[in-house]
Length: 276
Image 1 (cartoon, rainbow, N blue to C red):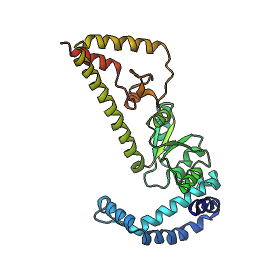
Image 2 (image 1 turned 90 degrees about the vertical axis):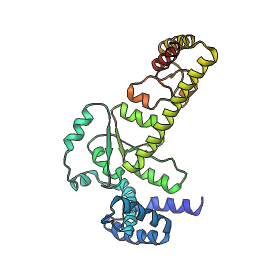
Image 3 (image 1 turned 180 degrees about the horizontal axis):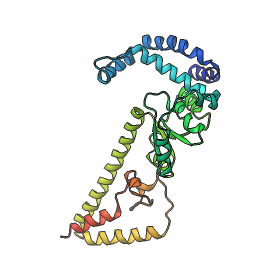
Image 4 (image 1 turned 45 degrees about the vertical axis):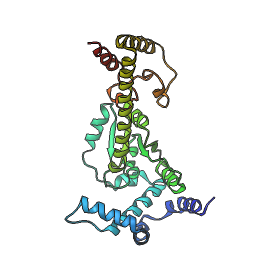
């Protein structure tokens, strides 16, 4: 085990035992040290703050301090007394969440800058709701420790780059928690990647039709394949769906956003339009 891994293990064992009253002073010291020791990160934060709040930018050092506080709060989740936690919260608009959840179409819960979503999400979990949090894949022992701390009270984790995993949470009516700046960009990147895959499949259909000079026969073949695949369950999942001629998965319009295949009906329509 490396020295860094050993320190991460030590932090995982010690930080949950840090009294909440000590978190502020510890964060002041550790955050200030990080601020002084990381000039590139300091410059990046200053640049971001100039865009977000150009007239009254907050203290750059305070951003580092607040980041340390949030990590301390995450490690404290394991020892969180949910009754005391709820008693310390003032909630407004709770009925909006319950109404959204009652629709059964899934709820996206964003903590914005209220604090770590893993901590704020304990409000939902203390009230009997299941919460899933997208997280980055990591080889860092420290971030693995952070993820173990996040899930200490039952919070579920899903890889941030798993568009299908995120979709499954919402499709079954679950609650997806996220910090907007972290999750939106990777999901958008995944959607763009999948859209490009669908565009290439349209082009492959058109190229085949031009080579064979028989777009109607290709359209007819796609119809037959789609009919058979609709009757017989195919042994495929999201990881292998792109290998099939037609999509082996079934879903609604939202699912189509995360599909590597375009709708079969649209492929057939485009092929037949080439015969006119």
